Length: 122
Image (cartoon, rainbow, N blue to C red; front, side, top):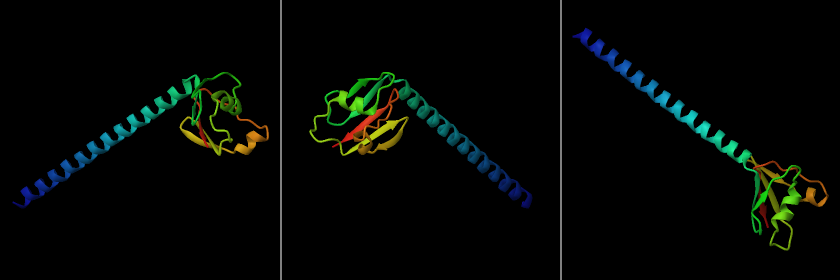
C-alpha cells in the first residue's frame, strides 16, 4: 500500500513537471514569434521610402531622398499653424527621439532616414 502511494506521488510529480516544461516551451515559442513580428515591422518601416509627418500639415507623406533633413521635411509638409511647432518628435525604428526646436532655429538640422516619422505638436 505504501509502495503504491509512493508510485502515485512520483507519477503525479512527473506529470506536473511535464506540464511545466510544455508551458515554458509554449511561452518561449510565443516570445520568439513576437520578436520576429517586431523585427519584421521594423524592417518594413526602414524599407518604407517615405517620411510620414503627423500633425496639422497639408502633405502628411513626403518622398524620402538622400540628404533630406528634418527642416526640409517640415517645410515640405506645409504646416497649417502660423506659429512654429512647440514640440517635434522623430520616430526612427520604433524609438521616439524628442527634437529641441531651438536647434532648428539656430540652423542646425537633423538628417532623416527612409521610414522615419515626424510628429509635430503645436
